[in-house]
Length: 260
Ligand SMILES: C[S@@+](CC[C@H](N)C(=O)[O-])C[C@H]1O[C@@H](n2cnc3c(N)ncnc32)[C@H](O)[C@@H]1O
Image 1 (tube, rainbow, N blue to C red):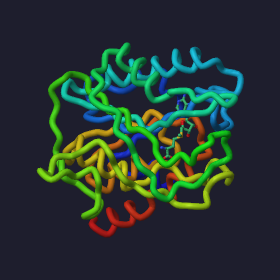
Image 2 (image 1 turned 180 degrees about the horizontal axis):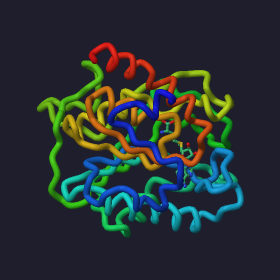
Image 3 (image 1 turned 135 degrees about the horizontal axis):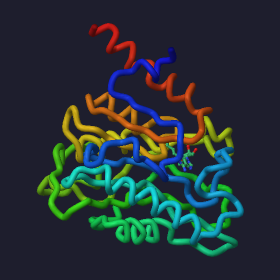
Image 4 (image 1 turned 90 degrees about the vertical axis):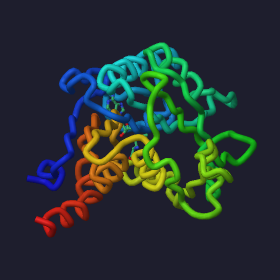
């Protein structure tokens, strides 16, 4: 049995998140994810959302199906955090995060904010942008208006622009990305930084709560959840990520075995 199958608190489904009926309704406290950015990357699976020949509208239709599933699975005071960015299409900027926010609202969610994730170490990528893109967005939504923040002041240093004078969390978050990963094999491509998912997990859940990632990839959300004593449910089409996830979660398994 591999590390992931034997790890307490982790439940991975190797299937499309367009159908998450196997998960109990209202059982998840927070959805933390980064979806395919429309047709930006080929993840090598025929059923993936966001292929080279998929229209922008069809992509959003399929994504909305996922947001509807997330809505049903979330508890009434649950939240959803979608890390995503704008993409260039033939020299024209597509406002992907805004359209994702709109479709999530159509699925029933309340839009709370578009947090800006500032990436100071980002360098010019292989796109036709005229400026170096140093940010992404975190679309922050809630199932209902009422919900709590738990560790509101979880910060990443004294210079964190997210922390304002009165110690309330702001909507500009600074998390550097590792350099030199552009163009490498997609399975080893840098996912979002764990510091970012750590913040969201601590902010939006308490120990023992369940976090869902409908696009698990290499498992950064799972790492944050398990390291902070939360449960994690993940959906991912691509079984090729299994070894990468296993490797990343190995340290947690070693820790739990030594505690046992
Ligand atoms: C941006 S990546 C996620 C990266 C992830 N946050 C990480 O830490 O590595 C998007 C993922 O969605 C997966 N995916 C695409 N369509 C899917 C679908 N219909 N259901 C589940 N996963 C899907 C892709 O295989 C890819 O791993």
